[in-house]
Image 1 (cartoon, rainbow, N blue to C red):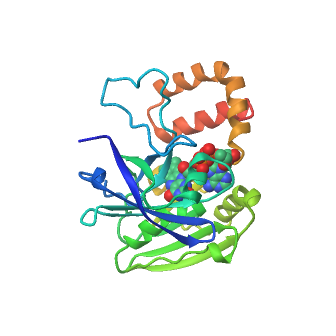
Image 2: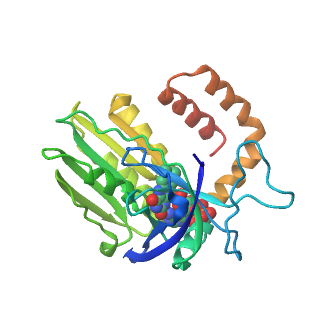
Length: 290
Ligand SMILES: Cc1cc2nc3c(=O)[nH]c(=O)nc-3n(C[C@H](O)[C@H](O)[C@H](O)COP(=O)(O)OP(=O)(O)OC[C@H]3O[C@@H](n4cnc5c(N)ncnc54)[C@H](O)[C@@H]3O)c2cc1C
């Protein structure tokens, strides 16, 4: 089974003004499979800027020829997978800058890319639990899949942080869904995600909160759910999908890397519980202004 599946763009449609749906197909998708989790995602490998072809990593253990740079790759949610039609849809937010967003904005039928194996981690909570799904535009593909997988009788609250009313999306479902939309410019997305979660009435038990989006906001939301609301770790899941001003964060990371990496590795070895590890990581990052 290949780990990387070469694909060809079949169709490109606008879902909203800033979201492009690309349908990938081609014989390279033979053998592609869903993980079954509705938030499943893969890495998309893109051609280097100026090239049409994607550098496909060689089989296990082999190296790329000298002078060949690996393909740029980014994480994207599998919005739809149809094994019979051999099609995968991915919804790309087309923001300024970025190899992926620029490629998606210009994509046309016949263009090449590649996908890695899909995996996810969302598990539908037991019946009777209310779902709270919070995210910015990048999380809407996963929220869409989760909502579409809800069974009759299931309730969900979707809190979406988007730029404007035209960016809102409503998903088909057998369950019952209430939507709350917050409209903010890009610079306000993090704060809006934070305050949306802080303003939620979260009843004890019987609730599962899923949040994804900007990474600083995700850190704050995780802290809030764990330390303020005191939800048990099985009652929430948060994931950073992208970082506002990523270049500045990475520059700072490079400056402090030598100082913090040994402490992070030590914490990773000594702390078995994921949430306790994230607490330790937050503390390490906070100390160095990351
Ligand atoms: C599990 C997972 C699933 C994801 N699913 C999706 C998905 O289905 N659809 C989707 O659009 N994204 C999704 N993302 C987010 C996507 O991977 C990032 O936005 C990615 O950084 C985009 O790459 P890029 O090359 O366009 O920009 P980068 O090269 O990463 O960044 C370039 C610049 O753009 C900024 N930037 C990056 N992303 C955004 C953004 N969304 N809005 C505004 N500015 C941005 C950065 O801060 C940086 O300044 C997902 C991420 C994860 C981890």
